[in-house]
Image: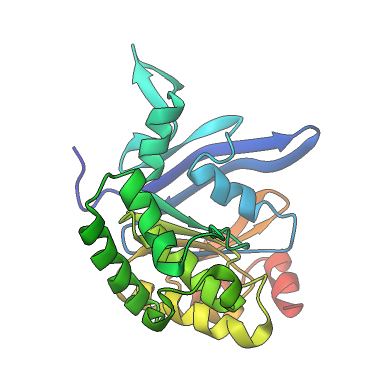
Length: 256
């Protein structure tokens, strides 16, 4: 039975290698409902791979990720875990919205149509219901006036906000952000962070790989510092960012 006190996401002993490169080393992590967890660290520390293991875009070599107490990409049969059928995994992934560095919008669809696409095709929603929800999401990300614009007519920040709205259209339990502002010009970063802050204020559970230390300090309630495939330090932002205990954390923060 799922209870409100049960953590939403649990990472239990996850490891991942690419050839001889051991990217994740026995990672364990708990994300509670309503948490904003920011994952920080230098490039190559394993942050994005960890995020991609959460929804099984990368398959862990060992360990299990649990969503609402259910193993992600796996199912129990006769007290053993086996790989899910891809269709079952696709259904499970609907509960986890994902926003990447790139926007990956459909270029031939308008902003509104990009948001409506998945509810229409995957959830088989009625057109008018999907359109109404899509317009509400455009309003939520501050882009109602861009409903009929195509991606090439939008700035990078606007495209990323549409990508966020598109993920929200599936009504996920958790939003995963993989450095969502890293591909943007500096003057466009703020508009995307504004949307993410509003989601946090609304209680959305979020896991965010980011280099935006101000966002991690001001919005997150849980910060994870990774280095060399390990979680070196984690805790409240005032602890990890404001008063780090490990030398590797101190060294990283001194450079950003």
